[in-house]
Image (cartoon, rainbow, N blue to C red):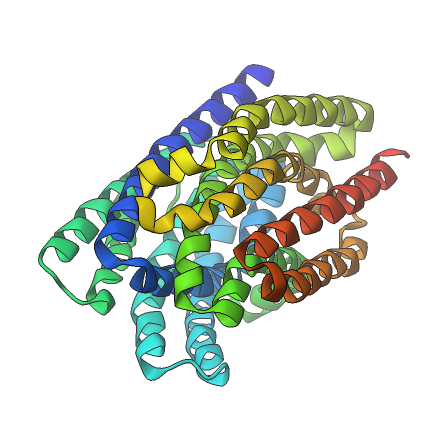
Length: 408
């Protein structure tokens, strides 16, 4: 069992590292090609749209992971009904992107960017629905392939569009096109991978599923919003230029936290079973996981915390050196990000899960308050301090709930 977990973790971590390296070099290319202000618009658009990915999922991924990992005989029944449900949810998420953009008073140009890039929600939703069924069977190499394949496609398409001097609205289509090609590949290969596709409109199943998944959805929506909260608040409070600066530093954090998330995902099916069968063993697995994550975080913390100017100058150029203090602070937050990636496995599999939601809301509200207090006074460094504050609160809340769940 531990060998399989290690294998899946290596698969996912390696794919995330390779994918993020490709995405990172694309990010650097865009930063140098677009300029700080346009790069800020690019960052804001991505951060805004990504907040609605959890709406399109609505907790279905975690529900599939929980149920299919316990009974793989439900694959055909679940998949044929979740495909149309996921499409309807993706349509709702895309509509909310545009509605909220208008409600927040964004310019029509910015809304057009949201409309173009938001299209990627549809192919992405289909691909990752299939991936959730494969992950539940601990076949995580397919997710690894999807991560790398999509990043390569986006990189190639994006570079071509930039070099041909297309406007920003067209450059956003690189993300849409990359995800669409991956989705078509999964569509053609699904049957060979043991995922017979179907289309069943089952309203009773839809309502029952959503009544179970809404808590997963709520937490995932909140988590995605929380992760990009500081970047969005810099955009709202300081404008495009400072968003470009802060986004250049925060991109490193987004890339690196996928490593602990890979370990957490690899452990999720085992955590689901052990919570029912052997809580003592689950506690030992959890403690070992935290220790491993702490050790993994240290090289990244040292790198970003002590060499931010060197990294910024090499990666982005001198125009972005003002982001170095924020990068140093964000580097030290990585220890907390790594440790906070694992408690969700136990919390989301527990009957006490819904009791956790108000505390998760409190965590996000405190992080939002930190942003309002610190960004106007300290700029992008204040945004980094707000991230640290939110993560400290998260460590305390998350581990308190894990202790309450496992103590019995």
